[in-house]
Image (tube, rainbow, N blue to C red; front, side, top):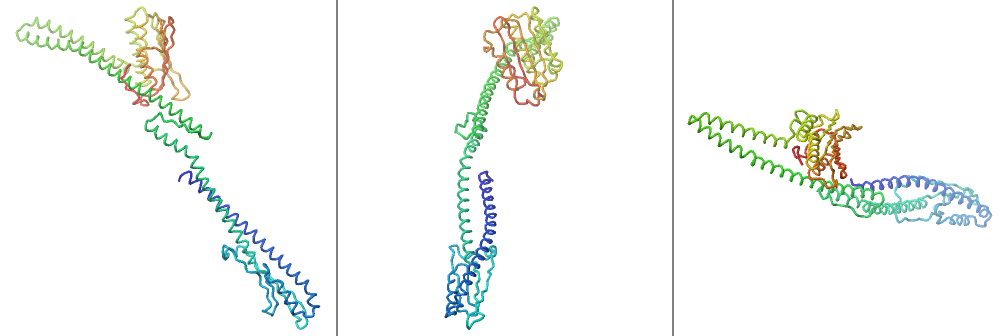
Length: 458
């Protein structure tokens, strides 16, 4: 049931209950009022007769005056007066009608005012037992109550109809913005994140409108970031595939071709019995195989950090630092890894490793640092989703003139962190080195499945 219909039904129920309660109270009051009116009319009639008795008894024609007395009450609304024993001498009350017809029997019973009578004896010559009978007739008064009741019902029905109509129109107008909001949410659900609500609304709904517009703006920004991230990932994947294909073609392909030629030569030499020369060809094959193995290990290392899954994050970073230490013996490397920064999940470990790898590569390729420091600490929050990894890589090289102009690799790392709920920041001044700080959540890999390809590397 719609909200509009619920409100209308609620108002209708309240009005019906009010009508029933008001009708019951009105009928109770009407019953007392009719009874009071009948008793007052009977008292007035009795006094009228009592006042006329002395004049009738002193009259020259008391019978005629008695009949005239009864005729005085002819057309009275509340009394029926008659002369006992003389059916011809009767004063009936006025017969009134109602535009609403005769009141039903249940209404007459509800009013419940019985007819009461009084008898006044008047001794006159020739009729010592003459009696005037005064009887109340509540019919006309009941008609008045019936008319008032119907008029009240009509007014209440008109009021109820107008109230329901106004509620229908007002609620429809009040709900119109909600219909707009529902349509806008459907647009958002279909991916149209530029949908906004610009209508002027009541203060209670304007906050809802503003919250919706902020949500739509954030979703639009997130969608733009996701599209840019996907484009960068696709670009990086294609670039990496191209580099791997080029390495396989330029480095591995010639050696495999040479191995094939040398193996055919060995077969010919052995067939001719030239064993000594065949041994020399075999050495060439062994050297080519070793070169191929070396190139394949390099490709595998680029695709996935060697030792990360087998030995853990600490040993993998240590192996990476040792590699750079051998190639740059003049650089001092300082590494601090917290004791609780192990077994964070394959995706988190890989992300940390790639960030450190990219930062070291940038520092040692483009700067001339004497000290490079790597720090990894874990910040434990009051809830599992607030556990964070704090990573910092700093050097004392020349730094960047503009930290916003970082290379494509660092920008890719920032997008990668953002995709898993982290962030990356650069602090640098020319001549003061570069500090790269990253913050990322400590989450199980199963919580992040589908966010980013595991082996994608900027």
